[in-house]
Length: 360
Image (cartoon, rainbow, N blue to C red; front, side):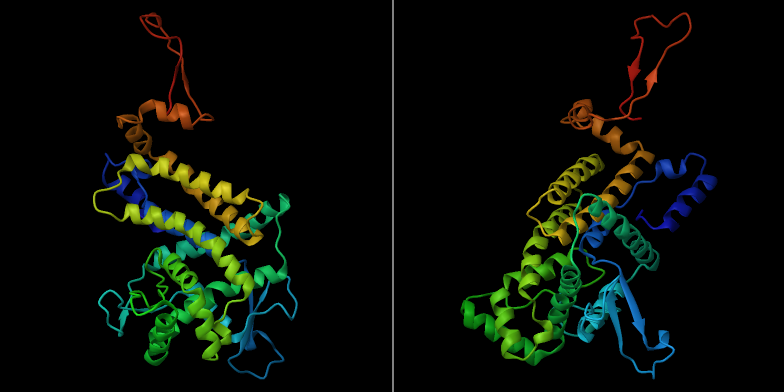
């Protein structure tokens, strides 16, 4: 099951219908969805405040509205294009191009409304806490850094979408790629962000960074300054791609048929947590990245704790020939234990006075 709350209700209801089903303790969670959720939290900008004509009693009407940074001033605002693209980033796109077939027509995208609602709520809930946690560790970002971060993905995803939607511009971009890289270059397109396709954020940003020279020349020569990244945004992209690659590797691994198995979930969560923790504590990382990583760590902690509800995860590790109890001894030094004290006349019949349970 994925992590939406309606799956909690399903597990509780099944327990009433099927006595052998133990409700939440028998529920396993979709690990790729958890990874995708952590990635969403890691790449989302700080909370935005939206104002529009309908909110202003003195407004004369009109479709224009701006998004400003929380506690910002009149100069801390996104451009109209950045705002439009950011709305799509937050709300998701209703359609997506059928890239796998090479067709340029739009196809319907299946969206699980319950899962999307759950994801939005989780993403929204952790950021204020992450910002405060980082602030307590003297990790803060300026208003200009916040603004640069908010504008990064809208520009990157927006340019890729514009090229996909405009054949003439796509041809010009391909000519730019050939001009700089030669005729032998096979990849000549920017990857497009598709909300329902896990890892498309990584692919989109990674391709944009790979085509850095081509994108800069293309936006300059074709009068597309609204899509041009600033020097600070290019630098931020360079720091973000390795972070998103962590989630890309995990999702690709769990998308393969038959592998990995359930005993690998907790070790992979451990590995992800340690990698994110290193980034958060790296003083050479931009504050934006460190704060985003703190938010991701909070989601990792939340869903790691939820694995305690189902003992199958740890039983599977114990039954794995190359892990067994030794894995817990090496990695779970702060593990909680339950002490069993035998009672009765047979308490010393070949038994140790106390035993420790690694599953508790």
